[in-house]
Amino acid sequence: MIQCNSQMNNIELIDNGKKSWEWAYSHMGIMNTIVSENLTRKPLEGLRLGLSLHVTKETSVLIIAAIKLGSKVALCSANPLSVQEDIAAFLSSKGVKVYAWKNETDSEYLDNLNKVLETSPQVLTDDGSNLHMMAHNKGVHYILGGTEETTSGITRLKALEESGKLLYPVIGVNEARTKHLFDNRYGTGQSTISGIIKLTNILIAGKQIVVCGYGYVGKGVASRARGMGAIVTVLEVDPIRALEAYMDGYQVKKINQVVDKADIFITCTGQKNVVRNEHFKKMKNGVILANAGHFDNEIEVEKLFLNSKKRYSIRPYLDCFHIYGRKILLLSSGRVVNLVGAEGNPPEVMAMSFANQLLSIMHIFRNYKRMQKKVYSVPENIDSNVAKLSLKHLGISIDKLTVIQKKYAKSY
Ligand SMILES: NC(=O)c1ccc[n+]([C@@H]2O[C@H](COP(=O)([O-])OP(=O)(O)OC[C@H]3O[C@@H](n4cnc5c(N)ncnc54)[C@H](O)[C@@H]3O)[C@@H](O)[C@H]2O)c1
Picture (tube, rainbow, N blue to C red):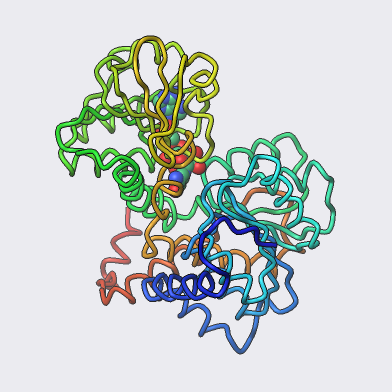
């Protein structure tokens, strides 16, 4: 079910989506290798797959791969604002049940999650775990297993596991080193800055940028902002990561020490209320607030609405609030700025993330009977295989340990 907000007709949309899929596909060579290696075996034959992912051109590469390996697919978006409508139309033309459009209301977004569950999927692939949570709240018992793309989603699933309520095995794809070291760091680092620039066209050089959280996303964002000439300050609550940021050459401070100096705040924590109403009162006039974390609760957006005297949209996803005698600019309604303002993470890193997804879906479908109701890491052989395939596609060869070196590594 596609409810399209685009000005283009459906044929134009499908054609554009196909071109975007081809463009992403040409930068995601390892997906093709995995499909070719498994095409005759069709390891996903008969699988009903339900996905809640950002509907981007990179996601279309994962979905077409899953279809080629035998799966039937139903898809909704992992975020009400991140749908690329040409991709939704293209996937629909390929037989995918697509329940997604750009600018869904909150209730439409929830309805669309529900629609995916109504297709009785056997494996759920989620980004943020709203689909997993809905499946659990409804007590759905036909699901064999699932995968989860992002840090925040895995946190929720682990909490569910600890409370003994997890209904099926899940592989936390973000745990793969070939996922978080590249997608979160280089991918989100680049696309977050890209989203901020696309929405505002401001100069990054010379700006005082505060990066909240120095995890994998924060590290990427901080390094790309510094690379473009920003003066970067990092906020952390974890002493080791704070020290890491300091030794990487950033200023590390408490929020109250920088709140009145920053030109841009970028939240990357996976926590709620990191930038709050009490901070709005002290910010510089014209400060820009952007979020790269999964959920739209890192900036206290509802307080901007509640306490502003006046608010208006300057252009799509760039909103101005007159509050406490100053103007505060909010990007992408506080939702993931790299997916709403830009196109999401680049295909080269999504190739690694989605290779882990595809191989994990195959693993679950093959092994679910032997798995427990736990959150698993991506099996080590999958993670290292993705790295090897990626190097091969980049044309990079690396050395092997010699026999003497292998012995030396085990000596004491
Ligand atoms: N936008 C994207 O495309 C994208 C991609 C990957 C991950 N994510 C999301 O980004 C968020 C961060 O992911 P990550 O992999 O970097 O997680 P992470 O756990 O590696 O890092 C988060 C960091 O934030 C710090 N933190 C927590 N609360 C804080 C606070 N109040 N103030 C300052 N620092 C605080 C933590 O100590 C931690 O070091 C998650 O929500 C994740 O799901 C988004």
